[in-house]
Image (cartoon, rainbow, N blue to C red; front, side, top):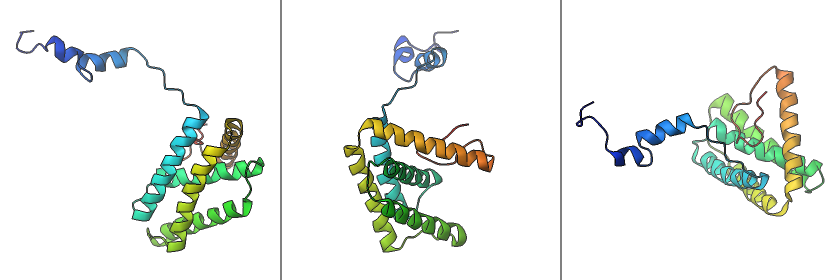
Length: 172
């Protein structure tokens, strides 16, 4: 190899350089371990961003999945007795179902004002819940949602969920 084509030592060592890329492939890096609280905080931010994407009319399947994950966790926390408000959770599920049904049937991406207000309230409620609920209950709720998703997918004969925030997404 001529010196003209040979990369310099600084090029090889700089972050993102060819050496870093080779080392990243050669040495398996452990995935960062996140606590349940970290996951819940990330989900709170994803929930807020998903609601804003819904408001703009540019929502993806992953963002709808985030909202479904949050509702599932809220429902599980109500079942565990950590929260009151089963009727409110069911009402929010109905609102989301109507939005998705209208989107799938007519291709409508816009929301009625009360639906958007309800989804924004969902994001604010989830942020409050994350701040107040202890980690043990959050982990129990997560396990309940994962198990519920597993049963539903088994009944449907599917191996994976589509969308979702990753917190409760089940991989069979």
